[in-house]
Length: 252
Image 1 (cartoon, rainbow, N blue to C red):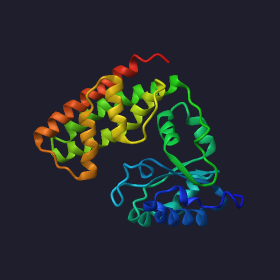
Image 2 (cartoon, rainbow, N blue to C red):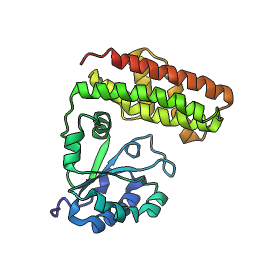
Image 3 (cartoon, one colour):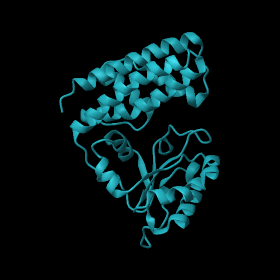
């Protein structure tokens, strides 16, 4: 990295996460040296959805090469990362991103929408995607979600806590998929989960109140009763079916 690229840009981050990421970035810079091209913060830690002390901080590390050789030094930071609520980073190379635009469009679109590169050059700003690829990924992911919901419910043996966790995970995964559908339809994308669900309800004439409720369960440590769990499961399952049908009918 040249001198400018080696400067940490922490002022673009919330004060709640600056110290954690300063420590993380300085350790990575020392360990990985020239192989580290950039550090980018992505996701909810950049939005009002972030809950200090509860929400995880997600990052993408762009490496020049030698991804495998970088695993051990990064893994040595695992305990300190966990204490600071930093999730295991996603490791990518420029060629990996370039060759994955057709299969990970949903994820890259979400990174592109909500990210801050704090070290090095921005790896996401100039990416472009084909609508047919993104539509196909949305269809595949939504139909896979239906399978996971069915299998998850059976495996959970109707255990209330386990089903609750499945629903929270499902709601979290649906937010970027819905934003990708907005992108396919040339609709502006909110970067917050509740705003995304409310806008989808309006745009697609669907009842997404269950997704809004479930999104709050994890943040507020809500413990729904058995009837709430059953009704919410049925509602979210129906929502995923409707979203899959919406994507099926999209012409791009």
